[in-house]
Image 1 (cartoon, helix red, strand yellow):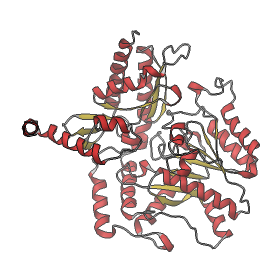
Image 2 (cartoon, helix red, strand yellow):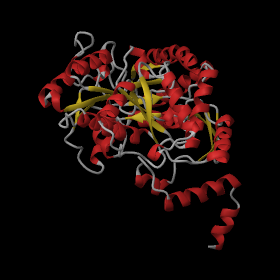
Image 3 (cartoon, one colour):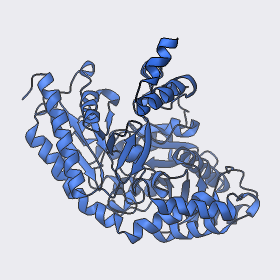
Image 4 (cartoon, helix red, strand yellow):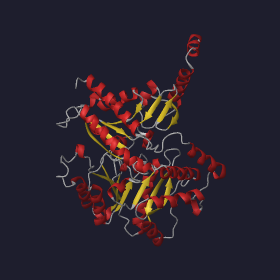
Length: 473
């Protein structure tokens, strides 16, 4: 025991701190969406202590490029003192006040008005939550409540898509179309159904765009007909499916979804949790296709992740109809709905996005990103299917890209390339649901052309190592 203490004392300060924190983490911290055995055996893979711009610094002082904006959400970058100051000022003035029972406060009112200014169409009314899962659970309850008030209580069913990710609360998990999340606790509710994803790189219908004539959207129509339109409350879509593989829909797809919803009198929900607030080079993802949904769920980029906040943004028409049909209390809400400090931070975050012209910058960087995917495909025979909008993108790895042959899952191609990225101080994410090998990127929206080009050089180095290991190239 004494010898161990001597050895511990001889470690550099950063190593001692790292060892102490790793030990405490293993003993007391139950990690979300993680391998519990891996965490217990090896401790946390990284312990970060500081963030600045597009970089994170770990406990050893090593600096990593944050190629995923942490959780697709640090849109204006790390270390923005203005957001900390906005939180400090609001906490000193009014740290918390409830929005229940018609109570209100200035930050939530100002934020509601600002969102109405930014959102498309008449999406002008906001109900606040603490994050994306709460937003999606709330939007499901709101649309079902709406149809009950309209005298159509049988409209209970929600249609999502395969490979959709809508969160991990009970209702949101049922809408999520990734089986690993559904299996974790229980089977999804029978009232949640899934249409085909618009995943052209791996069409589950075995078809090719544009000859397919948007058959994936046609599966939505088939489900509605099978389940009976008068029993369907809403369709929910991510404009670009994020965690399912950064699936960018083909032109015409979202317009067709809107058309089908209108045809059957079904509400359309856009899950903008990842795509909102500039991520795709437009303020909201649906604007890339000139589509206006009936409701939107938002979170993440509304505060750039600096403090938890989410919202359901609905059309004035829906709000007004609910008001006209009932004077009963709306029995839904969270303690932190419209949290004053979170709303103050969101207002400052949105001010920065507008003041610095970040949405326009993202649109310019989209070309750099797409050029980067072409660069990878030209240099590496295993790389294909590069895609994205704004600063949300992904590419895939294939054993034979000409034939579309994928690697056997035992190869762990995407994970190996991502580990090589980690070695080169770049943080990105592998997505391997259903046997795919996808590498996703979603950096802070302030990333420069030089930083983006550096990211793709690192991608190339990482893929090159993998290809040499498997004897390709």
